[in-house]
Length: 449
Ligand code: UDX
Image (cartoon, rainbow, N blue to C red; front, side, top):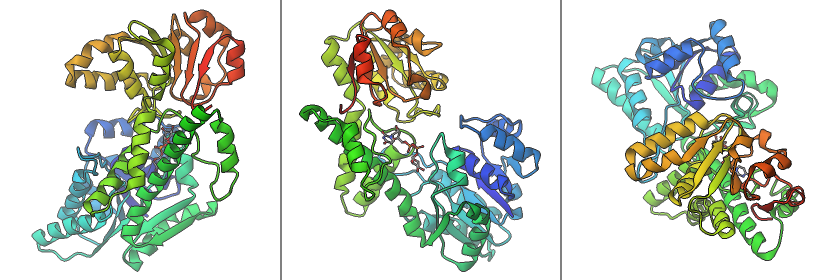
């Protein structure tokens, strides 16, 4: 089966590579010439465990190709997936510029039946817009070519993307014709050995499913963060509460971890977009509005704890462990570290940071912020990027853990104690043992315990 995936971002590249690994002949398309050249050389632009080898293996086998021209390869394909970005507009709704550009290119070049599947996270009603954009271009050319649109939202998690894609809990597909349903059933058949289900439904429901899933997960996290903050006030331990409620099968154990806020490319954006979709339909999503408010506040919680321990922060030295929005990725989109860095630097702190993979990304992001905001530019010199986690603690007045990378879990507290000038640890992901820290002479604060 020949398929094309347009957009070689996270979702596009992982999906394309995994489909190729099951035997499909996949062409990945991207307008970014540099990126395509890098990919052709086997140089992977994102950090995702296992992806390099899988790309190289499938390129060698001739099942995975890269090109900048959708027009050139379009009519060799049976299915085209669109996995281009849908960045949030200023008002929080998803910007469909790239999705519709792809649709128009398809309409301008199509000569035969094809199924056009949207994999990007797009608001309800987008497949209909894609259909109209393609049809409009076909009408302009005066040709009558049949095609189908479909929606196949992606649920993979960064850092676990290959495993999530290869053995998903479920695949959701929105279709409007039996032919498209048959073709997508065939494409996903190799995954059936893993015992998972393809759930077919109408297109608007498929589009809605993605937003509802991410919003539900974000809701669980914000709810637990709210409970954690209350636990602190009444002397309860959120870890115990989590175990207590998570063992109820109706609730389940996952996504109940309190912490210093959720980030990433999906939860913040999708929660905002769903609120916006509802607003546009004259409905107010009250729960989700609170979910967003709680999360914004939660990202600042370690800063508040730091201030109440240290008082004035001017000229204090702060060590930060972890910059990415979660472990196993260099992605810093909407990360708590960005909020914390901004608060700390603006308060006159000197910050020493360490992250196993996200340091370059942090430098890049902060230099972009500094270019747009000259006030911020001079703060950036107050960050030092360290070679390892211990170096970051040198002369520190406090150590802040923001991302729970494995290598941070069992540090040598003796070494850290000698390195720091004040023994204060603020744990934003509840990974340290309070007794162990107390024994080592540290003042220790975490979330909800
Ligand atoms: C998420 C969804 O899980 C995935 O299905 C969807 O396709 C894209 O969005 P991702 O953004 O890669 O995936 O990360 P995820 O592992 O879900 O974590 C999101 C954020 O929530 C992280 O910042 C994480 O630290 C935080 N989180 C997660 C918590 O604070 N507590 C939890 O219990 C779980």
